[in-house]
Length: 314
Image (tube, rainbow, N blue to C red; front, side, top):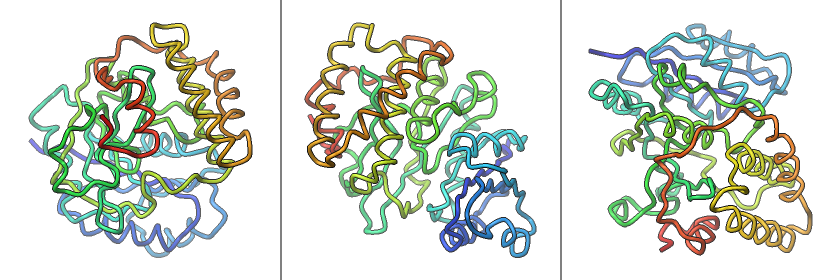
């Protein structure tokens, strides 16, 4: 039995990139409904969508609310069995959606799926996310080649945000993205919640696309690092990591990360973000534990190496 598909594309400016994404989605080999959410962008994307893509459902938010809120607006508008979130800087191969949806037909408890995403240079961008016992998340296989996919890698927890497929019934059960996280960490949190609720996940290696942005694009601006820090601090508190059995490890790790960021960037963006996220996490909805998808084999040193993109970290 075929499953209906909603594709949600959140956008904020950069029309040329968005147009390329939509043109690639138009070539998909499976029927789907396309929902584009403009997060109060600074250009004329909304008008261009109406003029050039009349078949697309367009949602125009009246204020910039962040990645999670934009995705959620699209999720709420749809009704399909599956929801596939696609960043506007992803160019999907023609069979990406078809291949990504196929495993959901055979496993009623499959809650999410991750494709194989490449960087423009041909190396791998990501094959979903993994997480260590402190709930720190990392992209899998970033920088690897296809030939290295069989090498040891941390266990899959869930999809990476650039392209993420979800069963709507699973989202109905655990909730959608947490809008208190403006950007960075929202898809990790959703993967953790789905795993805790017993929903499965899978990497679909014949579902492919190219992510122009990439999983890691340098150190990023101060604002980016602060927002990433916010997500980390928020989840540390929401999941009670610091007061749990891995609390000491988590605190030591975060001190090292913040000190490193200070040395490399000469600012306290990561620290400010973590403190702000920690304060906000006090009011977060209680998260369930344990989380089966956590990779307990990721030790302290390995997690530090994964933070700098060493997918082969042992």
